[in-house]
Length: 151
Image 1 (cartoon, rainbow, N blue to C red):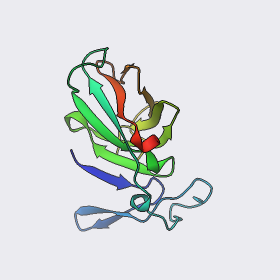
Image 2: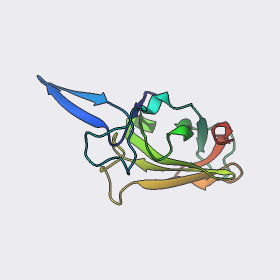
Image 3: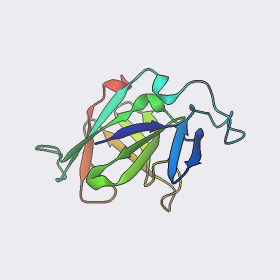
């Protein structure tokens, strides 16, 4: 599985010959994002890493061996976009990472830019330490198996 970090408001596309090059400048907050070119000086990958792991199962009890495990950056909060090539090669990205008392919530997108890609815009997903939550799309269930990034 391939992972990359992309900041939602600070991505600039440059066209060189027949190639597209994505240049990541840094994260920007909604308050400071007055134009597409404004970005803070703190890049996403410079934040202190805190990771949470979600395990997904093919049964509603979340028992046995997980079908897939996904490690997500709790430290990205709402400012940064985390892009991945997900299960079965789908392009996904996530943002709005939030730790609850015993839960982890984020918004998933069907694009690599934490925007566009689907209607409604983004899918909010919440997983807990003790429960087993049906995933979107249906057919898989998940729970938090490593909450250390939220502690």
